[in-house]
Image 1 (cartoon, rainbow, N blue to C red):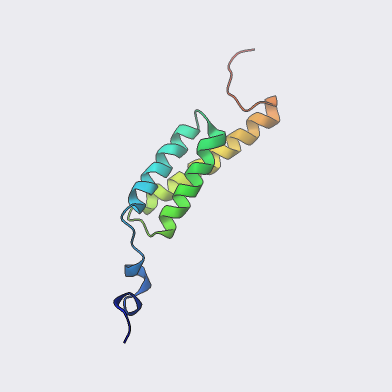
Image 2: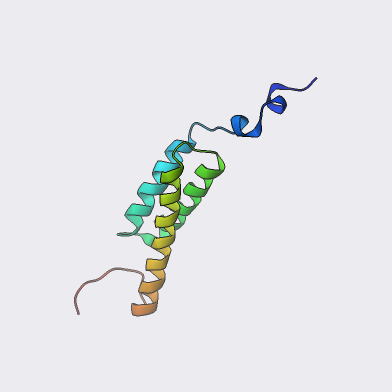
Length: 93
């Protein structure tokens, strides 16, 4: 006899209620990472966004935005390191 989880399609079986929260957290961390701590928040946004998508979140758009912003954080970090040799923002001369 097959169990209920084996009889259900994979898309219904793989729902995780915390995936929506992960998608929102990914978006918020990615957005904050563009301003401060991009070396930490960028990778966190990427990981949370990818995990939310893997867990089939209902907020797919926010997870994708979180991934995009996390990647932008790392690009900003690379530009800062290349231009100034530092990982921090500073204004002026």
